[in-house]
Image (cartoon, rainbow, N blue to C red; front, side, top):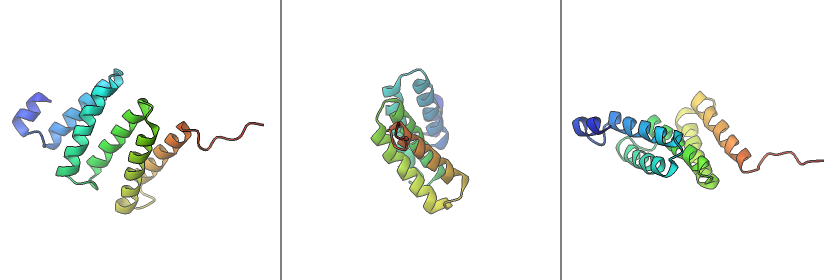
Length: 121
């Protein structure tokens, strides 16, 4: 990450990818706050450099939503996942595999919030 940042610059896609990989590693280690800081940085940079509709930006938004889920911040995760899904619907169409994956991820978050559970008899 440091070499990529120095050689290619902080806004280069390879650098952003390296930072995102570090965020994933930190998340896997349970270091969620550190992972969040890095992922927010990557998302903001990707949004500014590549645009909100870019495939990479949408992936990063989904990664940040996953961190929010692990932190128990379900509403924030839901909001990001909704943005990703709506953008993919507009850009790729409702039946595109990436759009369908976004729909499934959002549905999973709804289940985590208690939506969609059957009433007990």
